[in-house]
Structures are given as C-alpha cells and as structure tokens.
Length: 287
Image (cartoon, rainbow, N blue to C red):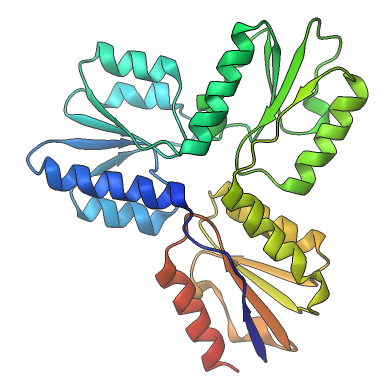
C-alpha cells in the first residue's frame, strides 16, 4: 500500500497566530480569569490543551457569541480566530471586560470589505454556513443582509446594488456554483471571493489527487471544522472512491484499508500535527 501525504495541510497561519495569542495571554496573566468566547479554533484537542493552561472555553450549541458573553462577568475574554461582531465588542466593553482579539487577518479583511459596502448602500449576499461563528461575526441578517448557504437562500427582487462575498473556509467549487447562480439572477452584482489562501491551496491539493489513482482519502479534523468538511467534499468531487473523515487515528479500523493500494492523507487547517503523525504511523503499521 502506497501512502501519500498531501501538501499543504494542517495548521494555517491564522490558527497558529490564535494559539500563540492564547498561550501568551495565559503566561502574561497567570492570576487572572481568562475566558475564550467559543472554541478558539475548531479542534477539541487544541481546546483541551488550552484548558490545561488554565484558560476556560465558553461554548454551547446553538448559542451566539453575543449570548455566550452573558456567562462572562469578569477577567479577560479572548475572541476566537473566526472573528467577532461589533455588537459583541460593544457588549464586552459595557461589561468592563478586557478583550484580546485572536481573529484571523483574512476574516478581518472580509469584515472590513463588508462594512465598506454596507456604508455605500449595497445589499450584502454573504455565502457561508448558517450557525458558523465566522458568518455570525461577518453579518447580522436583516432587510439588506442575506446569509446564503444554498441556491434556495438567494433572495428575489432585491433592489439597489448587490455585493457578494463569502466565508473564508468555503468550498472553492461550491462557491463558484453559487456565484454563477447569483450572477444569473443579478447580472450587475459585484463579486469578491474571500476564500483564504490556506483554504484554497489545501482544497486544490486534494482536488489534484484526481489523477493519482487514489483509492482512499483520509481527512483528519474536528467534525465541527468547516474547512475539514470541505476537504472531504473536495475529495469526493475529485472522484476519489472512498473518503474517510476522522478526528484521530482511533477512528480508523484495519478493515478500512482492505483492498486499498493507494491512500492519501490530509488534515484541516485547525488540526494539530501530532494527529496526522498518529494516522501515518497507523497506516505504516498496516502496510
């Protein structure tokens, strides 16, 4: 069995920066309560490592960052790599909290563009995942802002100029399909693809496997990680017969390798290196 390690993969610059900020904060304020508002990055192993440093993570399914802030009354609050809304910043200031921003620079760039277009009177079509913290931080859906996950979400008869952009961790292929459909309905719309470089390169590397006769693609990452799920989807669109998404090597069984001649391994942008090494060790042990 041949094993291909896809490159690039693993931690992106935004994740590395967010983890560094959190670790530096823990060292700088050892006697202060430090709360991360939501998962710093979408990986449970990373969050557990941060908790071991004394940082607490406040997160609950189906609760927004604004709602989660109700649980933080003192100390320092760290905003995650996914970005945060102005409403959350304002609420934190009103509560007298010290804030530290670990937002990815690509996310901040998208937020800045959206704000500028809003001020110019554009309706915003934001392509993203409903309930994802990056989408939550980028727009507040109202009469002139629209969150679009599928073509069914594209609104009809929007008046005035339309600006279309997206969550940074979307699928390049899916995004183009939605761009094309919006362009069909709104020929004069302005488009700005904001898929970050790390996401784009990782998806392209997986898509390029289509010519490598890969039997199985293993994608390592947290099930909550959108960029990890998009890597899996890209593998399927590349025609790879089997795609296995796992959080760690513990989720792989020897039977998964039956009949596999060529296996490729990649990992999401928030997946630690040691998880990839464990998967590779497992594969080499079963060659």
